[in-house]
Length: 397
Image (cartoon, rainbow, N blue to C red; front, side, top):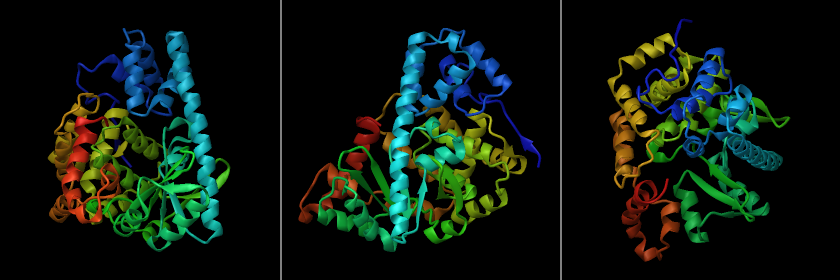
């Protein structure tokens, strides 16, 4: 299959800071000779190390930055900076190991009660795409179950010391009936589990159901234990939809796409495209692919790249990501810009309308933001946009 490749920073602004270029060169598990040479050249520049670490921390890619600096030219990095990165790397590795152990314990518990469950993101993504649990940062565990098993799983989690996140029993019942996911926190606060019975919220119009995903399930080794995992084709599409939902504001999400494609050289691209077309998610897929190609040099099949290049909307969205990705300035209008971005990323009118109608439906986070008695529940339709504006604009991301 013929392919098109591009250098990692080909589409970046020519005035890009050396810290950003250095970070992009380090945001990969495999560094070739040309990238190694670029790293050594960049590191001779006047690097603002504090800015580099702050940016890597914000984008959740510190482990990759540390590994590649340490493997390439540790002597060129100030000793205090390298130690700071090393400590961050080791802390993340310990946290990931602890959370992986907890995930395996929960999966075994569900299996003993005949409850099929699919873990995704978190440890399984680190294992399948990065090949090393320590190289990806994650802060919670995501587990997908069938809708009919949600209450059983909830009871099992409670039996293990978990409690519902910020909801009273009445709100929790309503949430479990009307939503697609719910968060449970271990009583010592060490682990957070996001329990899903659909991959995405309903307004996202991404109806890949459990039974479909289970049909294509694969098995991988995580900490010497065999666990089920989404097929690479399903996972790639999900990662692109997930990144688009969040406007690709985190470099780690682009790394996930790049590493998944790198590992799965025999990706069934025909199935990926057929599924993306059927779900109305082709534009989101294209956006994830072009970002991985532009920023990290990911090889994309030539036929798909040609389709991407003639999609003016995808190119416009990719430019918006480029402008905002390393921009730390918050704006009170960001939530509205994010909504417009997501609407533009959908190619079907019904998906745009569904997002507009359902995207502002209150959920558990709104209920916990300002607890109200049931007779004032209608006010949550006003509270929700205020909370989102606070989170994405007036407050901190």
